[in-house]
Length: 231
Image (cartoon, rainbow, N blue to C red; front, side):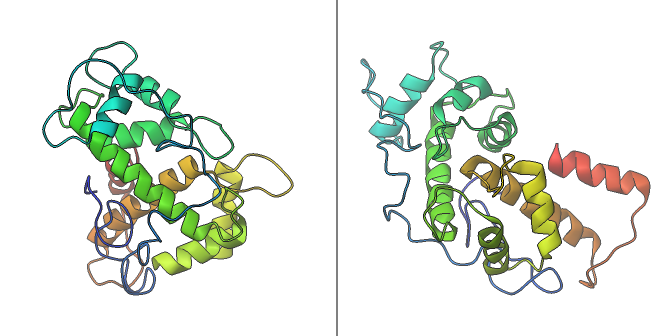
């Protein structure tokens, strides 16, 4: 996937198209970016805004606020952000930290050195990426509860252009939602689900050259798809 926002959702390419779903971008039109929502805490993540770190000006092309955040998150002063450091900096609307899988997906997306860490430029791009995801999440969070329910997830998939059954949405809730009488998806899991859905759809489309909605795969082809797109 592209590391920077495309049409429809952050990092997206062309939409699924028939028979995967409707036309347009896979995630519909961009949400009302910048509009207030239920997350309303200061700072890009919903957590407390850190004080600007002392010393040094922002590098060229890096927003000063993003540079301030980078210095605050870079706990060991290495000049890079690790998965562990990123996880400590990102919170959902219920103040739970982002899960390891989503943090790793995003680190890998912006890791230009293949070191498992991101520099200040990657972190600055990641901040923009997350903010756009938050805005999109708020668009689909119809009741402004701070999480995505089953009906909201199903509606989100439809507006994104995916033709997915209610049973599939229930499966995702069972896999990724916290156990409760009314399970729902937090922001981190929403990002993870959508990134993986886009990636696997791209992989499937590469095999489905006739766009008929089904393919024949060998066992090794299937494993290759999983390893290259999901892990």
